[in-house]
Image 1 (cartoon, rainbow, N blue to C red):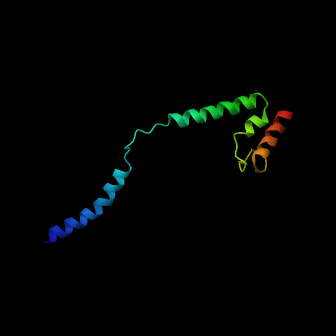
Image 2: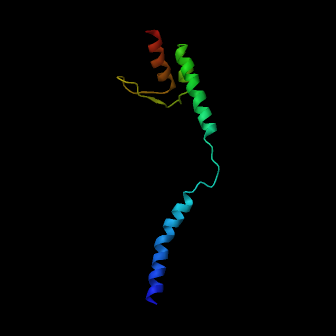
Image 3: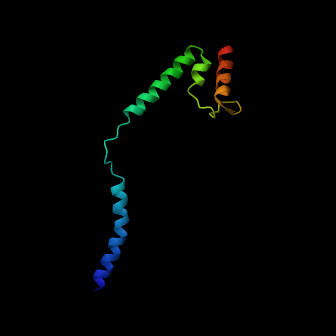
Length: 92
C-alpha cells in the first residue's frame, strides 16, 4: 500500500508538467507570413514617405496617442507631434 500511495503522489506531481508541455505544443499550422507582409508594407511606406520628405505620410502610421522618443529630444505624444517632428527634420 505504501508503493501505491507514493505512486499516486508522483502522478499528481507529473500531471501538471505534462499538461504544461501539452499546452505548449503547436497544434495549428500558424503562419506569420501575413503579419510579416503587413509589417514590411508599413515599413516600406514609411521609408518612401521619409525619402519624399512627407511628414504626414510618416505620421499616418502612428496612433493618435503614440509616444515618439527621438534621440536627444523630449518625448512627444500624438500623431501631430510625430508629424511636427519629422517636418522639422525635412525643413532643415
